[in-house]
Amino acid sequence: MTQTTAESPARKQRAQLRVRTLRTDRWWLAPALTFAGLLAFLIYGFWAIFDKSYFADPYIAPFASPCLATSCPEGARFLGLAPFGAWYALPPGLLILGLPGGFRLTCYYYRKAYYRSFWLSPPACSVAEPHGKYTGETRLPLILQNIHRYFFYLAIVIGLILSYDAVLAVVHNPAGLGSWILVANAVLILCYTFGCHSCRHITAGRLNHFSRHPLRYKAWTLVSKLNARHQQFAWASLFSVMIADLYVRLVAKGVINFPFA
Ligand code: FES
Image 1: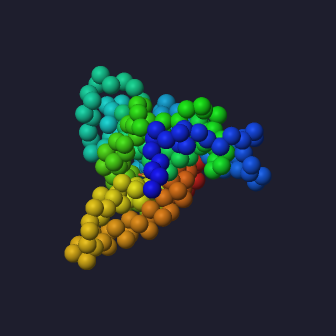
Image 2: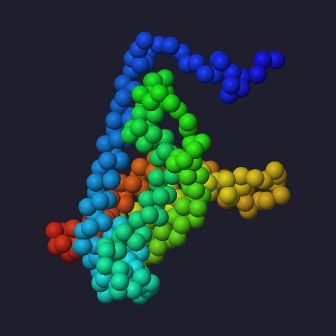
Image 3: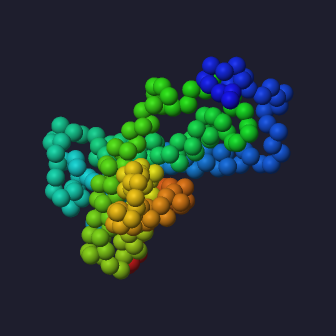
């Protein structure tokens, strides 16, 4: 039997086409929309990190939670903690940005999304990429994408803290629209987090016999259902966190100011 190896001449050659693709559909639409969506999120996130109106009691904006800086206003500080002391003078959001940011950046779905839309590598199936060399994720820096599993553990903590914020908001202002926006955001964030491919693998990925582990099998079944909609939850939670964050800031700035805000 002929074996195809990395050294095989057949593997070294690609089909020589004179055009970039033979596709005639609108293959560019999905990467263009993805590019626009992710860029909007990055621009909003950059603005939000430096915006100071992130607390409107009992609401705290998700981009600033958990608030762990000494500059956090009374009632906003998470469990009253300020582990970084008075020397930390930068925006509180910068302290925790790396956790949800790293989680999304290394997510299997987002990798596909930004490899296609930002790096055009490749922009779509059966469309040639502009780069001459392709090494995948086999070397630095992209081999670091493998730390996704560890970001997953940290993302659970962030998801639980956002849920705690939402519960506090409902307890203190059950009729407030903001409370329920925070609840919806927390639910979507948890659905996205627990639908993670790493979570599915951790839950039961290495079991040989589901019948001997009924509880893990149940958990795996649930995670698999979320996992099947991981792309949808990735986008839904991306927009929900922006909407919830903006809503709290607009209330804090007095732009939204009606009885049931
Ligand atoms: Fe998307 Fe883990 S694969 S969050």
